[in-house]
Image 1 (cartoon, rainbow, N blue to C red):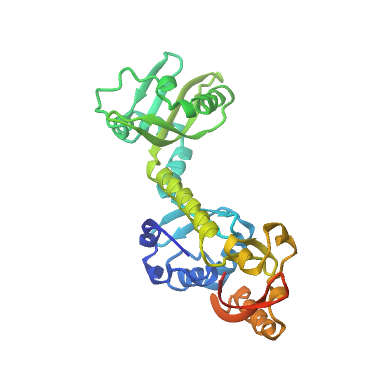
Image 2: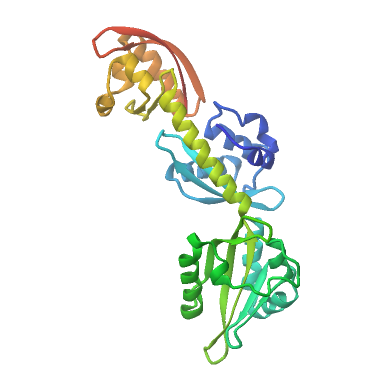
Length: 325
């Protein structure tokens, strides 16, 4: 398991477990048992079982952290068989959603009196109001941005999809919920998450397009960093001088790096037919299978074994192997 400092700081209760070799089940059991997460009405074991099923299914979910914070979790399977986990603090977003749902009248008052990143476009008069907080997010003062034009200020790569979302909201009443970039006063762009709604009068006419923005630049930078890390991991997998494999629970070798293929005398085309159980010397197989089953069942998080592997020429080679889930 590898993680960045932001995640480590978010769960200090299990910081010592955030190291390579810690299994998914062990880490989540510790989160539940040490009171780091909100268990709801169930037990710690109920929470761990539910979390494990979500992990297996690859379903996004919201993790309730003690203290009232909410973490949105998305898990992506990598080509190497690992899992890339992206965690985003959505506490403020959920609070904003709740406030938005309470009433249109309350929201109108907030638009004109809040210092948050709020906008209100009067479609009848074609006048745009930007709250001070909106301007501040982009580095501008309260009396600046008089020449702001949303269409032209949008980042070129975001313009088409964002303007289409605006049109759907105004024309069809669809919720406006999208991410886009706007330029800062000094230099560069800020990533923003815009959420808004069309306000309709008693005659069914859309009179306002109102919403709020939050700065998600840090999250986007974290996503870019994770992608870069994944690319580095792929490079290590391909160029490492030691043999590395990714295997299925039944022993099938799903991926093998060039080093292990060279050691065993196989090429990548042979991968669909390779199974580490069949390649393991008969005298070592029973012990290896038992250790691997403990890993699959969660009774261990890794193991090390010295055994013999059969090469493509029929001969055997001794290897010192380590496996982890």
